[in-house]
Image (cartoon, rainbow, N blue to C red):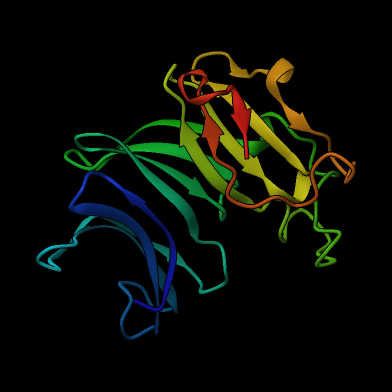
Length: 192
């Protein structure tokens, strides 16, 4: 694959990987260059790699699936930079069963990277780079270019009382990447 963005353990022998391939117009199912996003499951003992879900998207800019976590037998949680969203896909049915969109929480005049001087929407607006389902079912999302970590209830949306950081207040967080949640059973709640 051209690029890999995340790898997480499923069990002692298997990992889930987010990967992508930039394809020419001749390689794509349409008449323009495209990108093939892929969720892979790799057996570390046998090296057997299986694609469990794929999707083509127009263009080859860096708007990848930045993080993928397995949350059930055929269910995967995906941080999607292109649509500035998080979704859950059932790979048995290939149906997206839940989606949260950044525009439901942020005004498009916010965001953009101070460190990399990207202008914000529609370029590298949120740089949504990490997603994790917590033991209680909430979804933790890293919004790098908003200097925030959000906690999303799948029914009611963002729980503002749990938000860590504040847009453009780099004294709290400064364009964080790949935070991990520590549950109460391991000394939390905390985020590193």
